[in-house]
Length: 616
Ligand code: SF4
Image (tube, rainbow, N blue to C red):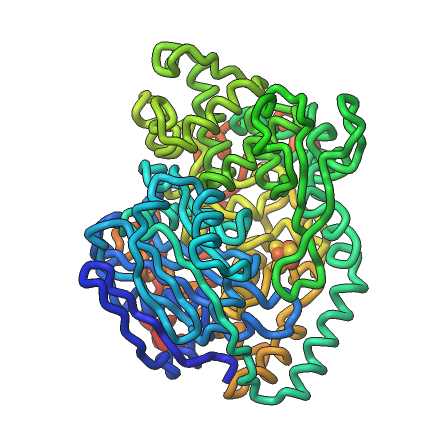
C-alpha cells in the first residue's frame, strides 16, 4: 500500500476529469513520483512532440511515502517534456502541497491537452473541478495565492501556480507552491502555462493510513529520524545555515563558478554566505535571516526565511517586500551573486523574492544574466538592447532590473527569459553559454570537482546537481571521501549517485536526507509502508531502471551522445586559482568508461542486454 492507487486525469481541451486506478504493475517497477510518472509520460506521449504544444502532458505526482510520518515525506514532483532542453523534465518540490494531494487521495494528476481559456483545478478530496481563471491570469504567484484563498474562504488550501514569467514565455519558469517552494527547474511552469492552466488548489482531509506494516513503519521512520538528528550536516549544518552552509566551503576548494564561470573563486563569497545571513546588517542592525523553516514532516528544516532592510535601494517605497519571505538557498545565492559578481546580500534576497513571486528559476536566470553580462562586456549586447541598463558584472542595479523585466516578461526580459543557450546563439557567441542540453549549470565548477563534470554532461534533464550530487563524496566525504581533482573512479561514483537519487526522488522523500542516510536506511521505511518486498538491492535496480528509461526517452526525443558534453570553457580553459589551478575538466577520460559500466554502446545507447536485464 502507501499508494492511494488513484489517478486523476484532466483533459484540459475537453474540460473533462476522470478517475482511474494507478497501474500497480508499474508502481512495483518504478515505485512512484519521478520514476512512475516518467513511465506514464513515456507511454502516453511522443517524445518528439512540441513541449509547449497540446500533445505534451504535465504530471503532478507524489511518492508512496509522501504525506506519511517519514522524515521529509512531503515531496512531490512535476514530470513533463521540458521546453528548455527538449529532454525529459522532472522538478521536485517540498512545502505542503504534495502531502495535501496525498491526503486528498491522489497519487497522480495527469494534465493533457490545452484549455481554450485560462482555468485552475480545484480539488477537495475526491471532488475535483476546473474553474475559470480570468481573475488570476496575469497575476503573480503571491497575488494568485491570496485571491484563491479569499475566494474559497479556506486558509488551509494549498496552492501551486505559475507566475507572470511563465505566461509570458520564460523558458525556465517553475511552479511555485506554498508561496516560496518551487518545482523550479527545466521550465515545468512554462509547460503548465502553455496549457492555460494557472493553478492547482488542493485540500485533502482523508489522511494517509494505508501503510502495510504500521508498527514496523513507526520503528523504521523513528530510526531514520534519529540518524538525521545525530548527523552533523542534517542535524546542525542544514538547520542553522541551510544549503548556504556550502558557500564558503565551495569557494575555498576553488569550485565557485564566478562571472559566468570564468573564475573559480569569488572574492565576495563571505558577504553572501550562510554565516553572513546571520550577522546583523550595518544599515539597520537586523540580520537577513529571520528563522529556518521546514517542509511537511521534515525534521531537518533547512528552509530560509529572510527580510530585506527597508532602506535598501531595491525595496525603498515597496512595502510589499518588507516582510518575511523565502530566503536564499546556496544555488540562488551563487547564481544571483557570484556568477554575476555581486556581493550585495539584500539585492540577492530581493531578486530571490521576485523569482518566487513570479515563478522563475534563480539558477537559470542568474546564469543567463551572467552570460548577458559577458556579452555586454564584449560590446556585443549594448544599452541599445537593454534600454539603457548597463549590464556590468558586479552591478546589483543590473540584477534588480533584470529580475524585474524577466518577472514581467518586458523588453529585454523576454530575451533573458529564453535562457543562456538561445541568448548566446542569437548574439553569435554560443560558447559563452554555460549549459548542458540547454539547461544552465548549478553552483559547482567541474574543474574543481571533476565528478560534477560527468554529472552535468550525462544528466538526463540538462546540467543539474540534483541528478548525482558527487559533491557529497568529493567535498564532504559522504559516504566516502574521494579526491575532487581526479577523474579515476568517478564514472562509478556518478552512476551510483544517479541511480540512488532516482530512487529517493521516487519515494516522496527529500534528497537532503542522503547527507545522513544511505539506501540501507531508506529501504526499511519503503518496505514497511509499501506492498511487496523492498530491499536495498531492489531499490538500486529500480533506480537504474529509471535512469535508463529517462535515457531512452531522450534518445527517442532526438538527443544523442553529442549532447553529453560540456561548454568549451570547462574543458579548454584551466582554472586560474585555488586547488584546481591549471586543471580543466577531464570529461573525455570519464565518459567512455561511464557508457561501458552503464551497459551502453559507445554511442551512449542502452544495449539490448541492458534493456532486457532492467525489463525495459
Ligand atoms: S531538508 Fe529542507 S528542502 Fe528537504 S524537506 Fe526538509 S526543509 Fe524541505
